[in-house]
Image (cartoon, rainbow, N blue to C red; front, side):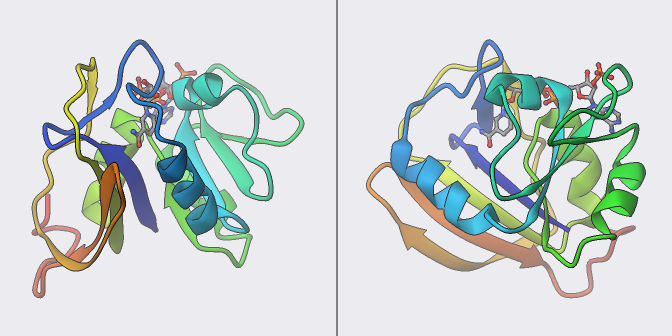
Length: 159
Ligand SMILES: NC(=O)c1ccc[n+]([C@@H]2O[C@H](COP(=O)([O-])OP(=O)(O)OC[C@H]3O[C@@H](n4cnc5c(N)ncnc54)[C@H](OP(=O)(O)O)[C@@H]3O)[C@@H](O)[C@H]2O)c1
């Protein structure tokens, strides 16, 4: 399972249930990486997007919603991963805070777009420890970095 997120250097990811920025190139990059795969997201992230993400298996974490056209509903991250395992896709946790926090100790890769400018926000990615950068690619408004768990770090030592 991988985590994909965009954030400022202060780990801001959202504001008023929206992305704080408008960076089409970053959305295109997210689209490129996740198309054909499985995405797991919290209910508020799903509502913020407003529709299932096309050409992807959509799993929404919620204890309030029920299965509907285009999405699976899961009541926990483990439940979401059980659903995801039925597909031969890469699974991406795409937000928000609790899905990121629960997935972080178990993720085998972090894909982070570091937004170059600062934006105010009310939602932050959890602190990142136990990962090392293995790749980066610079874009005009963000720097994309890929991280893998540090050698010797496992699910237990990373928490
Ligand atoms: N920059 C980025 O990469 C990025 C990515 C995603 C989102 N965002 C931003 O983040 C904000 C939304 O994130 P958020 O943290 O406020 O909300 P969220 O995690 O998207 O949604 C929270 C809701 O999801 C459900 N949920 C979350 N974790 C769950 C779990 N483990 N088990 C069962 N249900 C779970 C619950 O729904 P119920 O109440 O229905 O039970 C909870 O109330 C928005 O501003 C959005 O734009 C940014």
